[in-house]
Image (cartoon, rainbow, N blue to C red; front, top):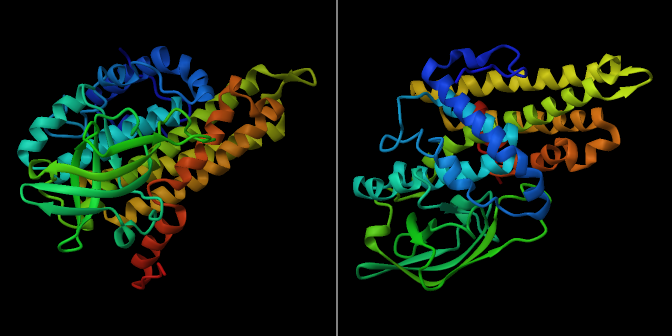
Length: 392
């Protein structure tokens, strides 16, 4: 299957990928176009998750690309970024489903799990046999998770007893396991646990009324005397610094998803502009429409250059927290501008699902806020620039 560069990849950054990476990306794009894109508006409208979507995505290898135990071939962080871009270009909710499974849940196990835990869980998750979720955010603790985590883990012999609550946990109503982060009652340090969702005392309730990422099944989780064995404690997760190692990897991919969401809106607006006739010609031939499209392309191209470089730094081992933080803050802000301009191209048609732009417009708001708000990421970069922490 041949790989065709996106019209929105104006500087052809995809040419940096190997032939094998381009072929894998082409297979993923074909699956998304034929099996996912035709149903996303329907499921976005009904706030439901398409049946069979996880096994279908697993068949493309998308859940295993990043981890040693499951990756089908040697691949780069730039390639994995393009995977996130392709997913979000079709639908940001689908990109989030994959990000939670592949980056947050599998990433927690890969980065902080023991060899035995990685061998047990990662292949099954890569195959789509086990769906994972990531439980960090709480009702009263979001940006201050490092300090304000209230979920408590108490050691009781060979078991741990978890009590607390989580909020905004993606995939949680459909997951088989959830990685729960809790403070150890003994030492106050944050630790991670693989919690089967069938465990007594664990419950997940879908959050209703969302106006963004409506396909994602976000939930409130309640943990009441949930007992998990020591064998399900992530053996390499002993403080929030270990949690941050996972977030460092996934934050950059959220930046890539923001670029993909911008591209999805841009491509829909460009297509519409070529087809919509006003004043006797397609509106693509009007100066003001071209201005909106060119400004959108400028944002996309600048953002794409930034995330490519951040991913190259990840491959080189030189990426730091402030690098991914700047990328996430910048690309999501530019995404907000871009989807608004693309909605403007469509006029009144920009607020209905039929033309796709409305969905990308609404989903941008969630991407802008999750995995670190613009403000928090700005403060991470500001601390790096000035040497002074200004979080409070």
